[in-house]
Length: 265
Image (cartoon, rainbow, N blue to C red; front, side, top):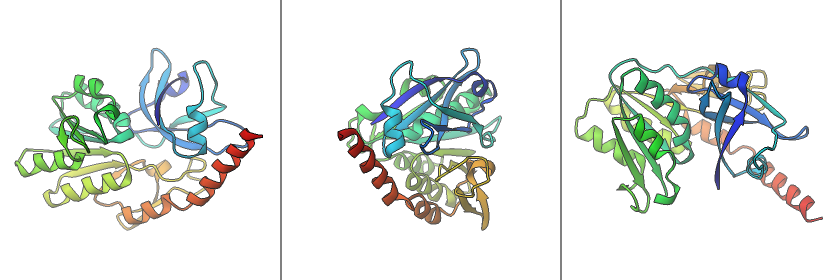
């Protein structure tokens, strides 16, 4: 299940820029998890985060109700996305990755850049932020796995349609599961189109001290929390990043079972 949270965090909202993220912790003995800032409102002092309930912490976060508090929320972290001021940019969001695409599309729209947004989900009921993106895009394309809305297929199918049609595209920004971002980067590589991806690997502190989020980009070691999270998709070693993202799968399952056992007592 995926849930949207509007969090009162005036200091974070005041400094946030598209592409940055926050680290949050729910309880003193809990883990810290990184979440991309899906939107922010400086006047209201709020940041928006989208949470997909997968591991223990995300499930506990999903159980919060209106008015509840988050123990720690640190940010904004990472470097803002370096986005163009002219041309045509295609923003590609897959699944929960559609949310952090929104602030980037908003900024591009304000700059007068032509924006084509491509978003995807398994089925029409799971499509998110379509109206918000449509408002800041020159064109919105939707892909669903079952064909219940838009093009039947995945977001890279829509992107390939544009590429094969010879459409002028100056840059692509892709956010979503690593396999999706890898597919987007491979689709644009033969055309030499600059492609940015937002990496969200395992993080512990989010400040570059632990080294847990290290990646290989262009043959060099980078830390997603301080050097990213936005990187050149053509330079990212996705095979390594995918392997590292699965490194603690057994521990995550054990933590979930332990928490479930505690709740049953």
